[in-house]
Image 1 (tube, rainbow, N blue to C red):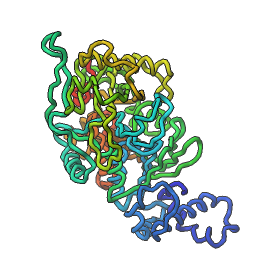
Image 2: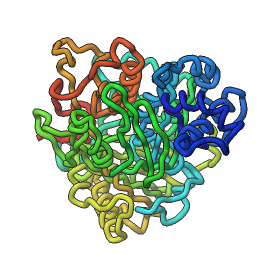
Image 3: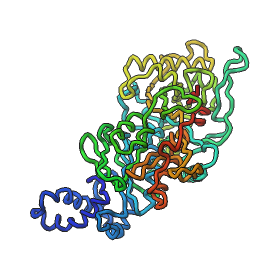
Image 4: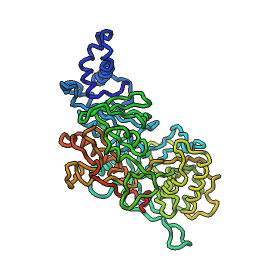
Length: 528
């Protein structure tokens, strides 16, 4: 399937499409681009005619397909169209939420480019039965491959404070639709030290509503991507960090070229950066939107200053999943059978422990009475000390880190030495979550016009109106799934609002970084 069509190319398509059909041999060389546009336009007409052109659609984009005549009429004399194509780089929660919201308008046609090999989701990714292993930390047998395993985000909560009412409503709807399941009361606890050494650890019940994905946390991105307003997702696409995006427009009249390894993926009227870390930094380093790029520069550290720091700061976390026999499980003996997940607060190497096989999923085919699958998330300090190339972790590092994490679990739960040995691990997989959790968030404190009264509609995202590029993500609002979703939705609504989309939002100097309360409270963010 050809790359998406920009508004400018759409006008060329309308002009040259019939010539391309009738007289291709008579077209001059200078019209080559228009010929390509004509071919791409025909594929869009095929969609409108209920045909099925090839391509990685998550359903047909209904608002676009049913309004092709409106799009044709919208082309103006200067080659522009009221309909805008948008490239969304990053298929995590923020990028998907942004694309889903844009797709509700008949004036936007979003395309998401995601690096995931099998499905989008970012931090809300899951390994499902039948998935193929990856390079680093691969499973040594097939036990883990028979179960649903969440290897990054484990729990969904509704962020505290104002501004998350829409997300709360969405969570309630997901629960009603069976996308989410609520953790039973008492199944999530804090592991803390006892009052004395002899008393050992104590599980302390965590209060409040918490959910997990029905079928894995990947159920959340799946629900966003397959809603009523569907959009195109290009899966397993790595937009080259060095030269993946190029600005081909003019100030106030943006046009972006997106490519992979020098091969074009399409030309778009606007661009959304929905991921972070070094790749996002490099991706925008040569773009003219310098203020937006300045906020994409990233530090990787285990801690952040109390005042927030000068740059976005991301930590790293090891995720270690392992299988043991259910019968005689030392972890069950200590925690009981009702506990599913624990925030570990009594050991410097650990932050989280969960039993994957205690999460109930609808339609689960495998009846399990033999194994327990546990996942432990390390502390950022530990991950920094033993950091390795996350795409190809050396074997000796896998052995060392796995052994240290097992030892830490034993110490945290007060297990006798030798109770949880490497020999007891039937299967395991180690992954390094390189750009894990934002330790600080960018807070907009004034508008582009200088007003210190910033509404929710003008914060939680970035937008450079001069160059038609925006950015969304949890680092711009709250270090959580709710923060990512809300950021993506707010950016999309801002772009769709004719009263706002010609004005910059969130760009420096109209903001500052502050230490993330959400990351700190969850025990995965350290503030010094």
